[in-house]
Length: 629
Image (tube, rainbow, N blue to C red; front, side, top):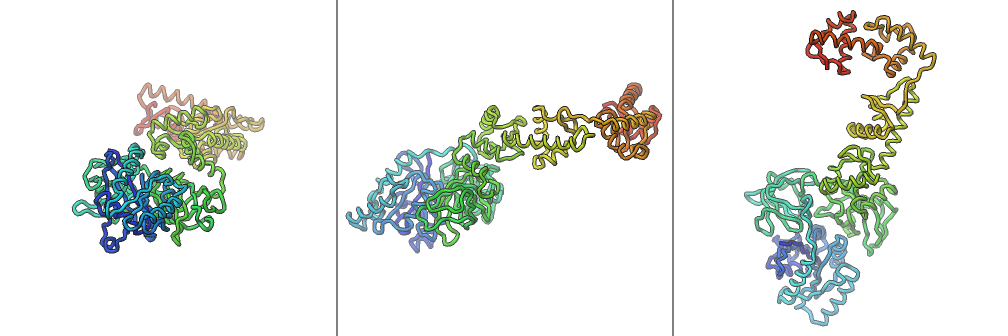
């Protein structure tokens, strides 16, 4: 069965609640105070099965300006609105303000009901209708039918019902695909069952037994029961009114304005990027950092508006803004919103969320503004490319992109593949991607860091990988940095060996003077190749430059650095490997004592040399013995 949401709007005491009762037989005023005062304070709820079989959930909003916060809460998610204007009063201030709000929230369609027609004559009705037509000119209701009704006599009720049915049939059904989301508009306790939250399902579906997350708190819970219009059901889908009985949640832990959603599908945020349009009727422009009340979904959050693309926003103008909120909320890209001045509470304008979880922006940054324009009007591939660009040097992954955009992973993977083929994105692995512009800049930076290192350290063939990471890409996680090195290597821009990196073709080149010192050091090491002099001893006899020459010889592969103070000729290491292999082949293992005897050295040399062989995975230690790796 198709389901839609019908909402009311209009000035206080214009007969909205009485009209809903005439249509449905349900009195939406629940509170004692509402009945005593004849004034709606809270949202009221009813339902109506239309002649075509469409089931309409009805949200009746209060009309008094003091309760506009509640009206804003109820207007979100409306598919069809009934703008109610009393025949005896005509268009009033809240009529105009409610109409502004409906337009700002992008309510798609509606009908106008002129109520209380039994109280006035035909001539007066014509005057009211003419005035009404002027008020709605240029709005989404400009061509809407005006139906004269009386909740007392029943006049026009059937015609109104028929018009609602026509509009309902034309409403595009909301997709139940994607994450579930329900902005909470009411919270109460049901004896014997616990906490119940109600709202309009904005997207997806929810079933009995599902795990849901309450935002912004991040609390997860399970759905014990689902009701729609007072009846138990197994699931509720997008476009329907639903009541969810939650397991293990105290009524104090959730409040109106929270969002109930699929776990992980939304993030609470203090920052929101948006396109904002001010109402033309405002008397003065909006200044940067003005304190405002943001109404999105069922939430009201206080914050300030940062104007990103201009110094002030004039009445009727649109601009790119960032809301900086004093408390967190949860929204999605594409959500409509309304803002009101913090005090006095005047409606300023509204717009659409462009980025629900942005970074904090400085004003007048062209790169930021360009990104927001893409988010506003770009196609799927543009949005995907921009999301990767905004991920920065770190890049992102296909699953992360799919989760952020609330789309199937395989669909996003296919589009990422297209962007990689087009050269817009660079694939670091089957999952990880980075934007081409980010990658080009990062690669150039890493290469420049390596070139500078080689120039400053001519006797070192390899730059430590971790040093390149720290100096060139500190913000990039280690795993991603490894993928980036692999990519650079595949492009022929670096060579990677163990924990070292170098530019292709780079090699240590000794001057004649340095080569002479190297020859003397190698000669000293070769006198007793298995128990050579220590680095400290060589420095003592050959001078302080002996240590840098030792390191250079190690980089060149002419000696092996066993410990920081012990170096062996490369040839000596190969001879040791042969001796150890022969011994293990004959005895199945080798001990430190056996190695000492085999090489004619002492324990001082045997232990570090054996540990070095372990480190290069030539041998493996098992207890006090070693075997070949």
